[in-house]
Image (cartoon, rainbow, N blue to C red):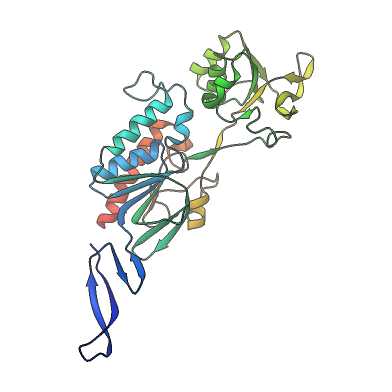
Length: 348
C-alpha cells in the first residue's frame, strides 16, 4: 500500500498555529473542509470488452495481477457474429453467447478483476504507470496497459449513407435482420461479414441482393456455398453502390452499372459490410507507432513502442492482420504474459 505524507495546521498548547507532519494509509481523509482521494492502483488496465479484452483479463488474473477492464460495449464486435463455427471445442455457437461465456469467465476472478462499461477518453503516461481518464470524470491508475479496442466498421461514403443511417442503413446484419422480415434488402461487400450477413438475412428477408465489386468472393467457401444455395439471395457481382435513396427511410439504391436492365433496385434496407478499420485513436494520441497499413505495431510479446503498453486483437499488426476470435485470444494471451514479464522486470 502506498503511504501519502502531508501536513496539517493546528494549535499547540500555547495557542500558536503550528504545522504537523503525518503519514496516512487511508483511502480518503478530511482536512479543513477538503476531501482527498487516493487512486486505487491496478497492475493491468485493459481497454476493450471483446474477445481480446476478456482473454487478457483471464490471463492477467491467473498471474495474480490486479486488473481493471473497461469498454463501451460488453462483447464488442463479437456480438455481431451470428454463428461461430471455428472456436475450438464449440462446433457451433452464437457470437453473443460466446462473448457472454468469456465475460463470466473473466468475472469469476472477482477478487482480482474489476469490470466497467464506459468510455476511455484519454490514456495519460504518468510516473510509475498510466492514468485512464473515463467519461464522467473518473480516473483509474495502473502500472501497465493492454489495448484491446478492436476495430470499427468501415463506411462507404456514398450519397445517402449518412442521411439514412438508422433509417434503413445498417452495419450489423446479426443485430438488425429481424427488422427486415419479409422485406427486400441489399448487402454490400464480399468478405466474411458480408456473405455471412447475406446468409442470415436470407433466412428472414423476402429478397436479398449481395453486391460485390469483384467477380469472386473473398469469404470462407462455407459461407459462399450457403448464400449460393438460397433461392432468395441474388448475387450482383462486378458492381457497386453509387447512391442510397429514400424519403423518411430507404426506398431504393442506384448501382454503378445496370443489373437486369436497370441501375436502380427497390430495397427497404442496405447493410454495409465492407470491412473494418483498427480502432487506434487512443494509442495514436498516446504516441504508439502504427504499421504501414494503420494497425498498432507490436513486437513478439505484443508490446508497443511505449514500455508498459501492449496491444491484442483486431487493432494490431500481428497474426497477419487476420481478424478472428482465435487470433484475438492468442494475441491477448501473449499480451498478458508480456505485461506480467514487464511488471516483473524481465520483459524484453
